Length: 271
Image (cartoon, rainbow, N blue to C red):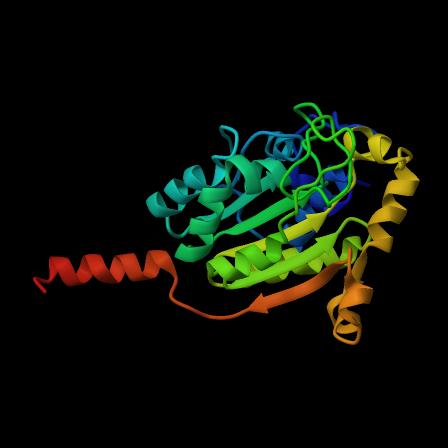
């Protein structure tokens, strides 16, 4: 018997991602979350940009939109403005979101439109050649940083909170059940939700940084994550190089579409 969440997939599996890639785990966690909240597939759209993670939309059996590199958020914004009642999800990668799409990201956080964005952070540009991204840890190697990156990397969740996102969380592919729970919580939140997922890329990141085996990459993810409750008891020195997981912000604020419709009503009423 097939798992009930497989109804969210088209008949084009198995996927084409490399062995050990974390994208399949993220896609499965999303599908499990959608089964839990019982979404209406006809009233849901998933939007993606370019990259390995952005291939997810090709596997989902609902309304999907595969867009240009870094431009998933503008397309998603248009969808939500045209159909405010539609559930909108965005899938993006660390380079797609924080580099070429960085400006769109900060303004999506600022606007607080009711959408859920899942950013899969495998620390590298996986599809386009293994270049280092704005989320590649300091000192780690890529094709454009063969001796190690000297750039300080973004903390994407801190960036999202600084830009005004009202729901910010981080999960990882090792703790898949927690990731499903975070996606459910992000979906239920009224406003812009950002969920960063620490993932694995054995080919483009792992082999250049001496962790090429999928099992070793999973261990790397596990070893570099710490739950929020535990992190609160740790010193800054102990947290160096670690990713804090859990819900980092969950606040209420004005939702963009609701405020826009109120503005339209005031203007039409002659105010």
